[in-house]
Image (cartoon, rainbow, N blue to C red):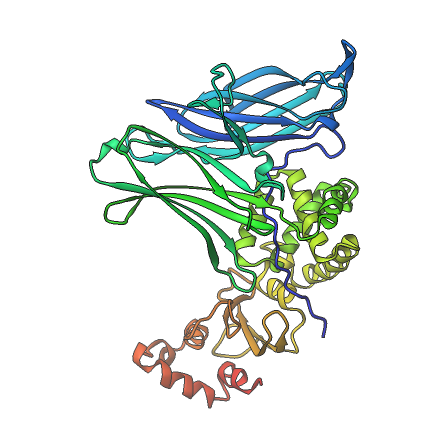
Length: 490
């Protein structure tokens, strides 16, 4: 029996927004408000070695033109055109910029086109949805700004200076291993709307390796003052955070311990044990197979990889798929297979995709790819069953299948069973009804649901108190076979 081993994905969606072969730019943004005015701050970093430099005063310099559009549907609600100029330097250096845009509460799409002034063919394009949910009448929290560096500054003309501090944003929401302290800036609004005591708790969570729970790694509590605007600037020690994807959450509580406002953000941490592996990883992506994949193959592959994810990471990959941030998707795919096999990530990828395509072909339905169906998902996640029993014409039940695994490698479970059925002709595809596998759908009254779908008055009239007896009746029946077959598979 061929086994597919569950891979524990360590890396979350990076907010990469780079061109495949050229201009590389980090785009992040945060929403704030001042009294009744809402605005977003757009943070931009141009990666120095991806732009063309020209000689200027015995040195070198680069320039990038930007066009920024903020849209609701097809309507442009705000825009700007500007140029970012890099520093005079002998060698390429990254350079950053910040722009603010007034905006109202709602859902938007941010579109950016950037062009290298010294190389007209070197173009960067970015498109990503975002939401502004700030409320001038109720307690709320701005977006959480992740900071790579915080230092005092008395330069009010620097756009990165707030409240006397220079705030350097974390780019790509990615924290390399040389950053031991994560800075946070956020603004709390309308705390004076109610007189009671309030406090905020900041937590960092990481999906634990061997289960699907979020393990809390940091918990910081701060008592708040009742102000209309409460700027919160703090530092968190992340030296001990291992490589992985993390979920940072800020929650405001009232005196009764109830959450009255919350905000969250995600980030990626790289903190490898061996520097040599980190160095290889950072350069390996530039020439990787993921850079060369056609876009349709890229997203097809990501959808096929969903069964390999734990619950916490499946959210991340679904975010990548729906965002259509192609370069983030490429990095995500490459990093996944590099972590699985850092000697031959492409070989590991192609072997899995050959298997995934076969599963797609076998289980494809009107609803989507075969690996997106319940049977295809389970097949890719746990491998080929030891035995499959199919019943398509049992008089008192819709078509169903029982899959039996003598052993599942991922959690070393034995005698694992799944039952799939077609709940209606309209659906016309098998869905998972019940399993005894840890972490999968468990439906103790699956047998009643299976047989109650048929036009049989004796079954429909079974009361809740009679369910257990009904199970024993079905177990000894040769007309209603599912329970008996389920019991016999060992």
